[in-house]
Image (cartoon, rainbow, N blue to C red; front, side, top):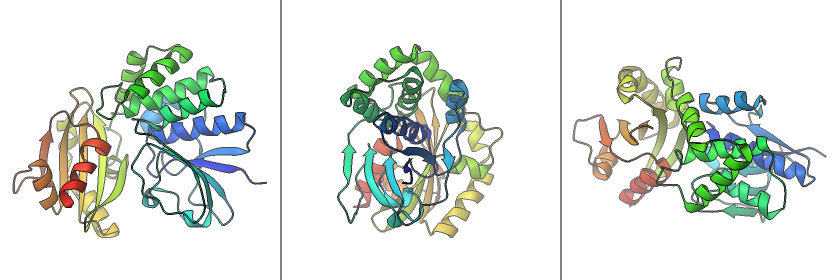
Length: 305
C-alpha cells in the first residue's frame, strides 16, 4: 500500500511545512503509513528550524497521481494546492483559513478559527493521547511563533497562546527569545532575487471579478526592500501577464514595528478604495497591519462586494 502524503500549500511558509511534519508524525504514531511532503522551496525561516533540530526537509513533489491518498494541512483552496489534486483522494484537511472547497466524497475536516494550523495539530495530539516529543514540540512551537508573530498578530487567539506555551515547556525553550531568533532568521533578503522575494509567501485570490496575487515578505527594514522596487515591479508584472492577474499586492511587513507597506502593481482601484492609497501612488503604509489573512484579504473581499 502506498503511503498517505501529508502536505501544506504551494510556496510553503513555516506553518505549512511544520504542520505537515507534525501531522505526519502524529499519524505514524497512530499506525498509519504516511509521509510529509512539500510543494515548494524551503524558506530561510523554516530552514532555521530544520537546522536547529538537525532534521531533513520533507520531500519535494510536483504533483499527485491517480489513486494517491493525501491529507492537506494549512490550506484547502484548490489554487493553493498540489497539482492534479482532483486525481487523488483527499482523506483529511486540517486548516485555519476560510473554506473554499468542493469534493466528490466525504472528508474528515478540522477547521478552527486560530492563528496557526499547528495549534490545531497540537490539540489533536492531546485528544489522541499521543505524547509530544521535544522535537515535535519545537516544530509546532516554531509554526505558532511564526504565524502569530510571537503572539502579537491579530490572528492570534487564546488557543494559540495556550498551546504555544505548553509546547515551549515541552521543548524547553524561552518562546520569546526563540521566536525572535526565528523571525529574524527569516528576514534577511540580501541573497534573494526579486522573484524569490515576491514568491516567498504568495497566494492567489479572487476579489469579486478581479483575480489577484497577494504576497508577503517579512523584514526589519522596509526601505531596503523598497530600494529594489524596479526589480520587484518587473517580476510582479511578469506574474500578472503569465497568470492573468488584475493586480499583485506585496505586503512588506516590518516584524519589529508590526506595520506593513503595501506595494501594488496593476489595477490599483480596489486598493485605493480599500486602504486609502493615494491616486498615482504605488504604496500605502498600513500601521499595525501584519496579517494577510485577517487584515488584507477580508478587507479586499468586502470592498469588492
